[in-house]
Image 1: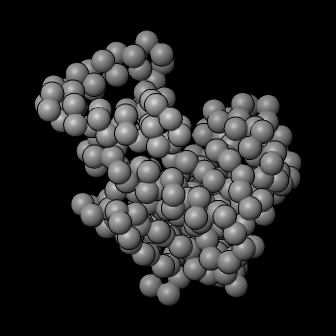
Image 2: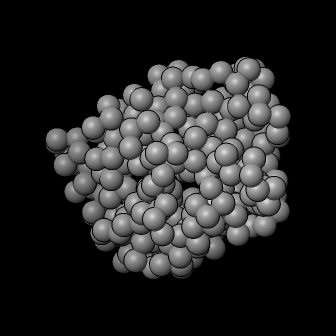
Length: 263
């Protein structure tokens, strides 16, 4: 679709929000396209990792298309938990494969929620984040009010959501909102390099590790440890000793290369 570009190479799919003139705002058709794209990528056995970014250098995503919302009441479908076919955050969360968010510019409100649905965030120095839900007079329906406080703490989350103010990429990094901050020209090469590292893993193991972390994070510590014991037992019982030895040798060889000496 013209509003969304999807490319695949060596097990990595790159999904680009392509409405740069509208700061990659989430029109109803773009939301539906994202849902369809992530459903297809989730089912594609040739894809192990997904990168999500925006076209241009001004915006990752400026949130919902407010101009469209003002003209079409049904444009809110999928925003408050209704109509999954228009809820891209839920589609990303349901994707069993790691999703790397390459935040190339502003991520505002619904765009902020889109970023928070990713598994890893790498930000350009041009990235900025803001939650303007309250300023627009609506409440978040894609998880921001719960995820943000768990990521950066309730005090900082309230500062953002109750003011609508922006924070820059360096502040986002200090607060633990993004993994790291990189120059604009290096953003996509860094995202692709990380994606390639992830894509080297066995696909089922990769998805299983993501599921283990995500599910456990939503539980109390005792329940999470019990879940890990059950999940790892089920997975590990299906792995042969020959597979373990082969992968161990590969890990040792990679360690020597990365460390520049003996592992």
